[in-house]
Length: 487
Image (cartoon, rainbow, N blue to C red):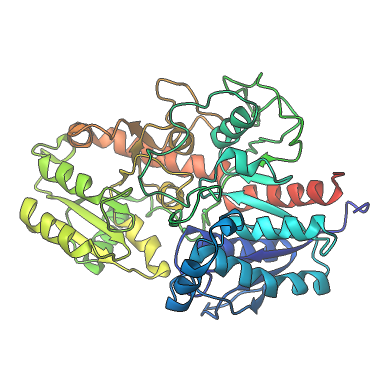
């Protein structure tokens, strides 16, 4: 595209959209809406129809095989073993292929410049067809589902969600050893296994925000991961690591959050107390409780809700409420799973009357849920870039999470590694949550000053780095670079 003033025509697609609720599907809807508001000609391609109160983008439904259907599962079992190379020994792979075969002619006919997806196999098929000359649309894979770096290396255009993910991928394909925290332990759930994996592997998902904005720039082709803001220029410790010459069009652009939808309670103390009490009543929580909360699928593997319940039950003294009559309470918002009933029973046994499960909340209820909290915790040991953390930060709620680089970057807690880049605002703390008793000990020592300071820092960090207008502007500039790129 020679005319820099012409905005690219963009397709956003998700093969599960309409019947699956994960971060990928949430990202697809939010991205289409944000691009349309920006002025981009965007179409959202979904598997089934769904209800939205209002949207300004075009919606196109493409029926396909569903990964959970018995027929798809049977087809997967009958598929020859060698077809694992194309993802077809997973039901998810068949869903993606049948969705792509309906999407492909739409991309051709519609003259789309960009296909932006987080479903890895959709990007795979678009690249294959483009290299065969069957479609001109260039695919961008938003890497949010833990594919192996060696598999990512085939793609010309990858949007990593955090600078640390970007660096780890470059290290791996460059033959260097990645950091020990580059992937979750074997066998642990947490995102989609690498498409390099053979038959029998399953799938997962990732979890899915007005002040002066500063732009954080992680563009490739410059000193890697250099960050520039209005009043600072800080470099990542590994900024000297050379950009991989075969991947000059990779980028690192984070997820975003709607900071108008997810916002803090009023500044006025009396109004804040009054509104928080009303919100807590809405969720069946005592109005004057001190509330610790999480938003995660209610299960043991990966999300570790059992660990959270044990740690909460172990808290005996809490400095932040020791001089008041407030009672500490735990609120868990998340999707129901086969393990949920057992975890509810565990909570009733270990902390009777002090744990509330808000199961299968509608998305429009989540802003109120975050504002009902005093502190947000995420106890999973590994995450790519959880949207729930951004939503909590945007709501002015301090975050406690595991001490891994990508979460430290999101929260703004440098930790021992000094990894944090961008805004100096800190919205919480990252600690070693692999240890029994670590969360309970940390929470017990929290002070009102810590909560107030980190809550203000949380909102500030999101506005500067993860707000919709900040990130979408970078999306559009990346689209232009991709369209103009020579391969």
